[in-house]
Image 1: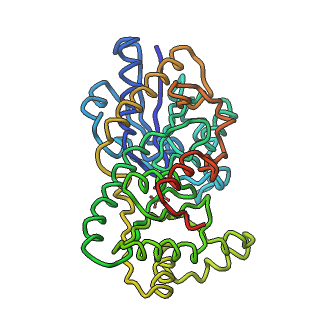
Image 2: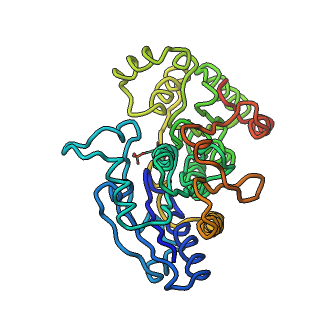
Amino acid sequence: MKRVGFLTSGGDCQALNAAMRGVAKALINTLGPDGVELYGFLDGYKGLIYSNYKQLTAKDFSGILTLGGTILGSSRTPFKTIKDPDENGVDKVAAMKQNYYKLNLDCLVILGGNGTHKTANLLREEGLNIITLPKTIDNDLWGTDMTFGFQSAVNIASDVIDCIHTTASSHSRVFIVEVMGHKVGWLTLNAGISGGADIILIPEIPYDIDKVVEAINERTRRGSKFTILAVAEGAISKEDAALSKKEYKAKMANYKYPSVSYEVAEQIREKTGIEVRVTVPGHMQRGGAPCPYDRVFASRLGTKAAELILQGDYGYMVGIKNRELVKVPLEDVAGKLKEVSPDAPIIHEAKMLGISFGA
Ligand code: F6P
């Protein structure tokens, strides 16, 4: 008999349900319905802290392969305060351990991104058996070439750029599409290339606004009526990147724009006189059904997690490296960010396509 808990933490994304279904189906098919007890903690780590859970059966995992969101709900429980008692004095780490032991779990399967992995690793250090699955549209988890949710989000952001293309071609304007991705540019880079953006701004390559304007003017000179920019929500100018953490924080305290795209838009307008429009698809990028790639990928990750559980081999994130599923020690994953290298071949290839990074 294996007793396994699940929780989904942090921002949701597509294929969370597909991944849990993969684990559950593989366990049930191997051990039989009576050989496994499954529990779902609700709303992320909160469910584990406050003992808010439900027992899950095979039926709960039926019909959810294509369902977006998470059947367990999610929430953000910041790692930096995880060791602080809550407002009622509850020791959160002790409570999570207690609830794990109360259910006599063999393993807890945690689906999450960067912050989630820090807490997952802490629970491992505290002696719990943990397996994690790499979830995030940002694709910024260290130790895996790909996270599930990412390709679905690339599809959505690309669709947005495609739609903007048709309206952009009717007007002599500059259009900016702001893409999610937190502090990294994977999503913007891939959606930008896929959507045929002319300029792509990502956090890993701080932009020079004059270079951005130069690229727009060059397009105009060559007869293009419009320019499309894919701008990462975390894009940063060269000047801002040169500031100390303290100086940058002070600047942001008085920041007058809703986000970086609006600042870029105002500067382009001032420097070129061209009308600029900003589109922010926001959480749409995390919504809807997972794309086929993510359904397959998340299902595969789920079965690999089940294999590790069956072997009693805990303390890993299941990821993918060079197209092979791999187990990566949690201590190696936690606290590390996978950024786009400015020297990566894909950046070089994008430049060969004529895409400007404003640098
Ligand atoms: O990590 C996923 C993500 O969608 C990021 O791309 C984005 O910066 C963030 O979450 C938004 O968080 P929230 O849903 O808490 O607003």
